[in-house]
Structure formats: structure tokens, C-alpha cells
Length: 130
Image (cartoon, rainbow, N blue to C red; front, side):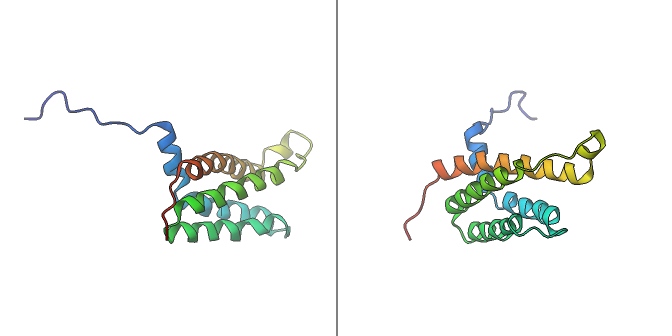
């Protein structure tokens, strides 16, 4: 018979959760996937420099350099966030709420989360000597 009061498991602190999210390889891949269709048609050169960097950050993460990958993705996410926020919204109520606008909002929200999570992971991460 199971005991009525199971031992309480220690829950991770918010900083630890952010560090774990920042060290994940999924977020840069997701950002590259969201940014690519936004700027592929019509092709925009400057924003299309970001997806290869995010995919490289994922590669670096999978090679075991999680702290360095978190720093790369946080810095480039902040740069994309600045670039994307400079865009003027379309006029009119219907122009703001489109599929493209929703995708842009999700991409910008993901960049904001990655800036915070990657910054925490880079700040509190430990680098192993090679």
C-alpha cells in the first residue's frame, strides 16, 4: 500500500528553469523555423542572416558547448528583436491581425524568451576547460 504522504520532490527554481530552457537546442531551431518564412518571400537579406546563425547555435549546442550556444542565441535573438520591432505595423484593424502578423508576434515573443533564458544560461553556466 502506498503511503498517503509521499516525500515532497524539490521543484526547480525559476532561475534553474530559465537556465535549462536557455541550454536547450530546441529554441534556436524554433526561431530559425519561424523567422525563415517571414522574410523569405519577398526575400529580405538582412533578416535572412539570422536563421543560419540560429542553426549554427543549435549545432554548437549539440556538440556539447551549451553555455556558448546560449550566449550566441541570446545575443542574436536580441539583435533580431531590435530589427523586428523597427517595422511599422500596417494601418487599419484588419491589417494588424493576419497570419503573418501572428507569426511575427510569436517569433518576437520567442526571441524575448530566448534573450532572457539564454542570458541566464550564459551568465550562470560553467565552461569546461578543453
